[in-house]
Length: 414
Image (cartoon, rainbow, N blue to C red; front, side, top):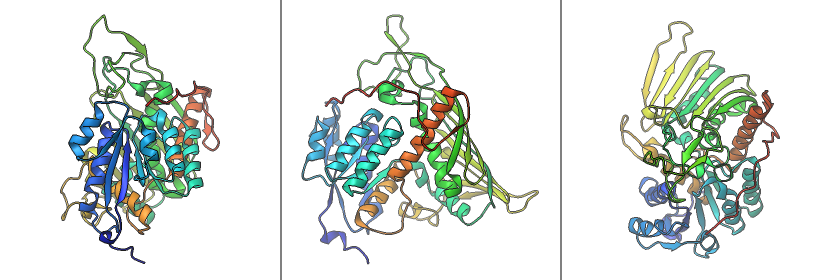
């Protein structure tokens, strides 16, 4: 059955908790949603924004007009005129806010990694199941049209049986020793550092692309620090791109979680995955890529050439390498551009994710395959196993893996 036309239904009223860069991206995605997806059966209206940083709230009004603002996120979550909530807070608040959203009976769009560890992700997933609300998780790279096409090729055996995969998420936002010590570098607020920040995306791509055969069974990992001490920030709202001027009078603090991780992953289908993630990769900016080798071909993709997929095969020797330029036939590309080769960007991926969220709420079939709370739990279990592997110096199974004990999260404020 086709859902009623959007004109005959009240709008879905949404709020955003956390109005830093990612909160603004979510809010903009909602505002663009009906332009790109006019037939989803329901319009979306941004009605409220919450952030404990007072400077963020006038910015929300300047950008989005008559939006109600809250210093306390609880007021937004409990508001009767909010039907769905985006959670784009720092990691240490994901569990508390996510659980509260579900218990308030609101649908949830929550950013990865959904807390500090697998226990946090499980708590949010359990609250969603108990409340019977809908939820998606912000693993946005799976929505790239080239990635969607790669998944379709893999599902129909386009490169035979996958035998190995390399996935690398490397960037340089933390490469400077003068980069300030924001919450991302603190264990109680940023959790496991580069693992939750970047390796979580890599794990999701492995599972999403390889399907059931890509379920990760065992891991062995090493992690490390490149910059063990950093200047303290002037305020809690400092961006992770912020750099302090070098000065002997600047107070310093210790980095409490890893800057980089290298890992080997075993999968249920027998393929071996090499995973690398780094936030201190000098000279690389958002260098996110994968390569998959199979018995009859190869696939490769790089985020910095987001609209291109490299495909070779099916010949075994001397196979040609085809650089496919994505177009309307691939993934959700057609919702944005009419012909191949017109570049999409990061923010467009969040519009696709918002569409997946609305489809889930309204019961529309088809469309992008959104990441679920179960995906977030599984990704977190793999990351926890990596930490345990580092701690114990051995291969560790991913099911039921526990991580070394860490301090309890701080209580929330505002």
